[in-house]
Image (tube, rainbow, N blue to C red; front, side, top):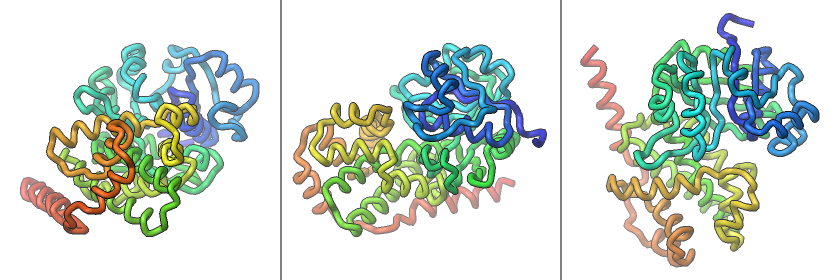
Length: 352
């Protein structure tokens, strides 16, 4: 164990929170997993697995599982937040004083309204004394928990915090890359969930491989266009937190947002699709927020507009597809995004 392998607590006992905590414990990191429900915590301690969200995956015996929030935070130097976006702020308001001075790493991929706030921005508001980072990438929980090879990105201006996260999470099955574009990494993680719903619908309709490829590449162009407009670095979207996360979420049946889209494509209502999933699919709420923000900012996002029209405006699927395919045929690759990045880099060099 190196000096950087500090005590860590993961808040949230869903599939991803459980996976992270288990990886930490397997890395010989003093790791604690906090769950709100003591009955669920006791069941996990007794069964040695999370039978509700991650059945079949054995938990490392070194992992501490508790519902005692104060005790779980007392010794932790790093705290990973794996809490649904709808409860994110309320949990922070409850525990804020206990997080002061700690490294807080958000793994939640959602956006809060009003304000169009990323989860890390909520952390800054509720725990101004904390050091803040985000974690995002092509990280399906079950594959990670089973030891499948993957990589992720930790994004923060605090290089020491990024190094600590790399030390506690990096292992033979997981590589952790660093980024300073916290906003871009977090925005990419939130936006891709919307396009996973579209991809799930397309798969349920039995579209061809050409169509699937078109959807993913146009989704990448669309989310990058929006992100650059909002101030993110376009190069972030060519990495793990952009195209990497987009590909896995749009192609895997293990993706929760893909599953919701697939159910919608089979004719189920939105309520039925969410109920069948039994977990939070962040993309549904993100779609509402993103549609509103893109209209306010004047950013062209036809896929977002089309999905919103189908789900929330009750427009026929065939009609929406017809509008998408008959829209103006513009440039394939929008170099303006990358030119903006080049200009920014040049400006930074001139100021140094």
